[in-house]
Figure 1 (cartoon, rainbow, N blue to C red):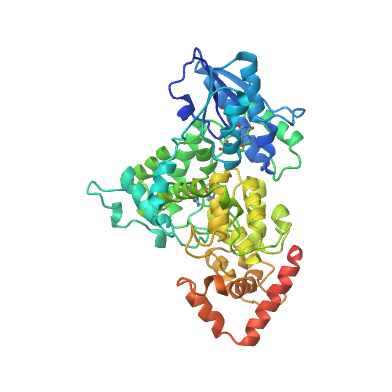
Figure 2 (tube, rainbow, N blue to C red; figure 1 turned 135 degrees about the horizontal axis):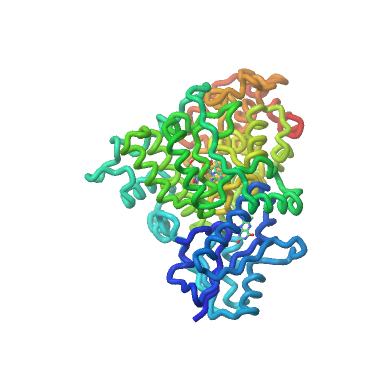
Length: 510
Ligand code: FAD
Ligand code: DLZ
């Protein structure tokens, strides 16, 4: 029996389920850089470089290990090429008894691959993706019968299941499940933030950078200063670099933002975890070991593991339980277009400019920038979820629908009616001032709300509170905000709403 094994651009590991039981003599592997996948969104140029270069390196690694690999490089003249057409051509040219692949991470492609058995005329075996801690079914079983899903409870299940940071008696290490309250220090420059891990591009990566510059010139971002790892070995070095230099402070400054530093103490591992270069379980184990070895405190290690074992698994579960309908949700009835400055960074709001500019240069912004700056602004301004979701899918090196969509549509935009999060993460400029030094370098004044130079987040926050009274005034976690709103004098409220209306009508000038 000769199998054709398809490995996708985000499945770059020899542990991928599609390779289980495969035979180097009879089976062939197919990998392809195709226009369809490279252009279904305006992928950041660095994401394209990362994936194409990592795919090419992985194909070479497979060949070195004795596999027969058919690798299709990107060809600009072949815009009609899709994964299906590459697989169909491979079957036509060399035959195959069946196609084997691991389930992909996007509903869009999943739907297409599910039809292949009919269109290709050979059996197509789609295997579960075993790179997650929980199966889709496990998550669905946990979620069944719950009106609201809360990450914290699922996370505890995952801690119990994996034993990560658990005592032999089945208690959480350190005595608490969650050290979130110890993850909120402002960073004032000390301790110094480590330089991010860098790999200088090799010949393969340089060739891909040229390809992307030439054929994807209109895509967001830049290939300049590309320094991501593109092999599992280098991604492991990136993990070691994080453990040594950033993890100890990760917990304290997890929610901090800086006018000076793009990366702070974050791991910058999501691009590797999501495309297969790093195994999430090994990453969590390494962090846990750092705690047991006394190299990092519990608030750092628990905070870090929570993101991967908790949030990452939780959003994936939500995605697969609720697609395809989830992508269409818009429970707050937003109608506004995405302001153009999301693509240029050309805004006088310092925090927005900084987050978007870092995104453009690095294909990266850390979680709080995504949630509380660019996300918060889109929420307050009432941007259509579909538009803001497409922006997030395009601009980050780690973006895939399964993880981007619940984070944006659910966590940021609250467009799912509170299914993922119990309250919207709406915040005024005060939050940004508390967690960063952006405000002191901003054109706008964070302590003003209604004047021409007042921080836009302030009036937009109250506008949001006012226009969504029916949605949130009965939410126990929002009650205090509504009482504060009611307590303000009518003329004060009117001035806030007037200023916000002006901003909303002139978003492209602020
Ligand atoms: P760290 O801060 O070092 O965190 C460690 C790891 O935890 C990350 O590498 C990641 O694997 C995981 N993680 C942390 N938070 C989340 C989360 N909320 N959901 C899932 N995994 C998480 N993450 C993506 O991987 N792809 C996306 O497309 C993506 N889009 C996002 C959009 C918005 C609006 C928000 C608020 C968050 C999004 N996230 C996304 C989650 C998070 O912001 C990134 O995983 C994180 O910033 C990646 O940087 P890091 O590796 O330095 O993370
Ligand atoms: C994101 C992406 C890009 C840009 N290019 C390719 C590609 O050329 N070939 C490929 O196999 N995969 C690519 N991917 C990843 C897929 O589009 C898709 O996002 C994931 O496989 C979903 O799990």
